[in-house]
Length: 310
Length: 287
Image (cartoon, rainbow over all chains, first blue to last red; front, side):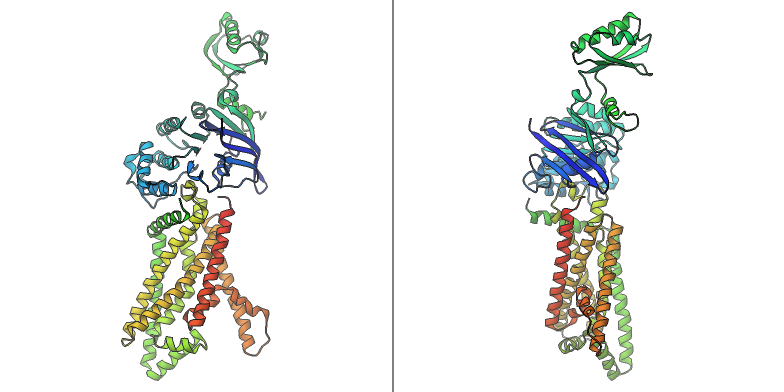
C-alpha cells in the first residue's frame, strides 16, 4: 500500500528539549491511523511537521509523496484540524468557510462551503457568528474547514476533545464516514474512540515510537487474551502449565491475562483449554476478549503513570 | 490557486476584520481626534499671532516654516502659500504616526501564531500571502485614514485662508498624502517585522516600540553630531547614524521636489527592507 504520510528518522528539538527523537512510521493511503501517547509524547509536534507548520530538525518527511512545505499541487489535498480549533470571530460561519474554501483552491467557494457545512450536519449555522456556536458546533465547523478542497489526507488533532458525549459521538460518526474515502490521521487521548475508528496505530512516548502497527498487532490480538472472572478459584500454576501458555496473571479486579507462547497452537484452542480449566474449578466467567485493549497496551508501553515503560 | 488570488482573498478578509475590530476603530478615531486637537491648538495660536498684526504674524509664520524646512527656499515658498495650520499639523501628525501604526498592527502576525485558532495557516495558505495580505489590508486602512485626516486639514485650512487657490490646495494635499503614505507604510513594514519575529502580541508591541525608540535615538545622536559639526565643531562618524533612522527623512516630505523624492525613495527602501526581513523570518519560522 502506498504511504500517504511517511516519517523516517525525524527529530525535532525545542531548545534543550527533545520533542521527537528519530521517529519512523508511515500511514498507508486510505487508512485511518491513530497517533497516541501521553501528554508531551510529541503527537502535536508530529502533526505540526506533517502539516508544514514546523520544520523537522533532521530526517525525511513525505506527505502524499512530497515535502510538507511544498507549495505544489498536493497543497490543497491536505486538510488540517488544529487541536484548539477556535474560530475567528470577525465573520459569520458561511463567510468564514467561503473564505477558507477560496484559499483551499475551490473553484466555486460558496457552494463548496455549503456542501462542507452540510457534511458536518450544520447547514443552519451558515449565518451564525462563531461566538454563538456551542463548543461541539464550533468543532464541527472546524472539521468542515478541514474537509474543504477534497483533501486526500486529513490530520485531525484531538477532534473530540472537550465535547459532550453526544457531540463526540456525532464527530466520531462523521470521521467513520470518511474511512475508505481518504486517509485520516487522528491524534487523541480517547483510546476507546481510536480503537473503534483506526486500522493502525503509532504509540509515541517521550518523542520516540514505542509501538507501531495494525490495531491487531499493537493490541496483540494473536498473542494474548483476557478472561474476566467474577467469582471462584483461578488455578494460576495449572493454567501456566497448559500447552501454548507463556504466562498468566490475575489482576485484583479479576481480569486474567493469558500470554501465548510463540509456538502456541491456534489461539482459539488455547482459549478453549484455559476456559475448560477454569470452568472445571467452578470459576464464574463474565467476558473473554482477544488481545489487550488499546488503553492497556498504551499503559504497558509508555512511561506515564501506570506504565512500565517497556 | 495563484499567489495573487490568495493574496487578494486574505487582504479582503483582513480588511473586514480590521473594520470590525473595536480596538482598531478606537485607535483610528483617537488618531483623527488627536490630529483635530492639534489643529485646534495650532489654529488658536495662529489666530493669536494674527491679532498681533500682519507683520508679527508673518514673521512668526516664517520662523515656524524655517524650522520645518530649514534652508530649502523652494519648499519655504511653496508652503508659505498654504495656511500655516496645514504643514504644521501635518508635521506633528507624522511625529505620532509611527506609534499609531504600531498600535494598529502589532498583532497582525503574532496573533496568528499565538492563538492556535483556525486561521489562514490551517488552510495552508502561502506564508508570503498571509504576510502580504495583512500588510496590504492595513496599508489600505492607513491610506484611507491619512486621506480623511488630510482632507479635514485642508478644508480647515481653506476656511482659515479663504483666498487660497483650490488647485494649490489639491496639489499640496496629494503631495502630502503620497509623502505621508510612504512614511506610514515604512513603519507598517517595521510593525510587520516585529510581529513576525515574536510569538505573542505583547512581545511584538514591545519590540516595535523599542525599535521606534532606537531609531529616534539614532536620529538624535546623529543630528546632534551634525549640528556640532555645522557650528564649527569637529566632524564625527556619528553624524551618519541619523540616516539609518527612518524618522530622519520625515522633513523631506515637506521639502522641495528633489528632497521629497529622496525622502519617498528612502521610505520605500526602509519599507522594502523591513518587509523582506519579515517575509524571510516568517517563511523560515515554526508556527
